[in-house]
Amino acid sequence: MTTTITRQYLSDLVYKELGISKVEASNFIDDIFEFITLQLEKKNKVKIANFGSFNIRHKNERIGRNPKTKEQKVISSRTVVTFKPSKILKSKINKNINVGEVS
Image (tube, rainbow, N blue to C red):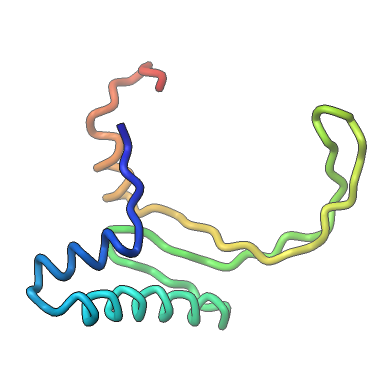
């Protein structure tokens, strides 16, 4: 079973681990996400050591197709956020997966 990690979960974890107030812990988590968001809005790359990098990528307009109806439609150009995990993160995620195992 998987767990969804939310802002509230992270805030509670900071509250318990650091012993600061719940309001301070919540503000701390909000500040981190706000900083990352602002940097991405400025088109800056955000690299978190041993975790990965967030980057902005521009995608051009293109023709797409609805797989059910086969109807073609124009997909407008847009800017997307990409995430590239670090080698360390990839290694930790994959250390318990056997070669050939399908999930």
